[in-house]
Image 1 (cartoon, rainbow over the protein chains, first blue to last red):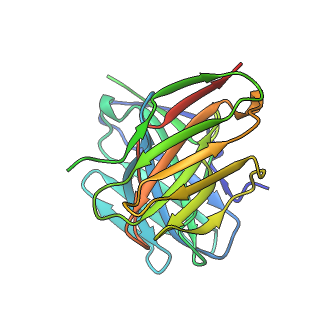
Image 2: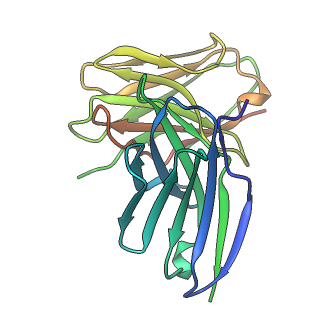
Length: 112
Length: 111
């Protein structure tokens, strides 16, 4: 039973264009959502987060949107850069504790 | 400031053996969590410790155990290793209620 799903295993985008990574969840108890970026042979790096009481959070080129009614969140990267090429994980935390539930990841490739 | 550190980086074991993985959190972080990442999947929660007490446990068999020491470092132990235990084991530390920061992981290969 996958509570957090990233339905696109991969995404290819041209440099300078927008990258949109999507994530769906099923557990209504999730109250905090995070995006992590992972390069090979490294641990996940925290990118940006959003509380369930908000619908948007922006940090530089990265913006996360949350649609609670649809149980859907997305990460927008504008403009995309070749250095953004990595695997992106969506994660969710429930209000009972600090445990994170991760999606399966989306591999983003930004072409020069 | 140093980030989360894990040791060893890589480890090769044979079936039936046991393994101990170590983690040092970011200075000031009192919470440590362990995750298992199998190739092609997202990290899966194993344990969380806070102030040396277990605060959460994922859906893993009793062969997996962990502990946290007074200096907040942590060990993950896996007994009776199976081939399916081959994975990247990630440690994350956090201030309570905030973002978790991950170490580089320990790559365990079970032959």
